[in-house]
Length: 170
Image (tube, rainbow, N blue to C red; front, side, top):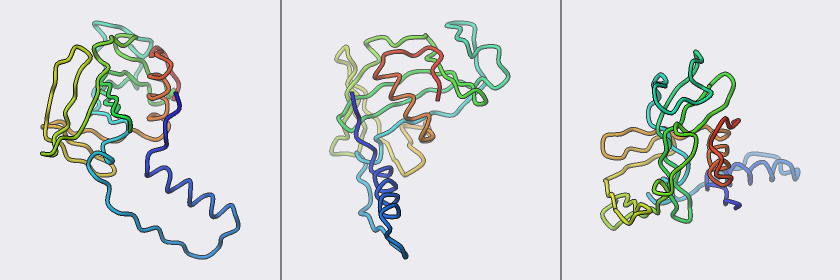
């Protein structure tokens, strides 16, 4: 499945295309602020902590640079996935903590009229929480998420598309 580039990426691509086409001088892009449902699209990581590898050991376990966090992936078409991941920062590799994703972790998301993120899980249960978002941070309840780097975001979405979560490069 091919995903549309997030709006922030599309502006950079447009700027590069203009420079490549021989446009010189100073160009300024003025964009309308992102709505909340536009802002939350992407890959978000809750605060990192040292890997705890007693259960669901992955290839990252035992490495000095192993960090663990919760990844929240939200697509423009309303799909959502929340999963624990372990990453090696130096080797730029990651795995889902369980090594695979259960069907119940796949969800749908929407922003309701009160500015809440509503996640409908695969089993039909719903979870709603007030959220706030800017270009680099996303807050759901009291959990602070940071936007994943562009290479890691692309790799997380590629793992989701391939349904392959073990020992993935980023």
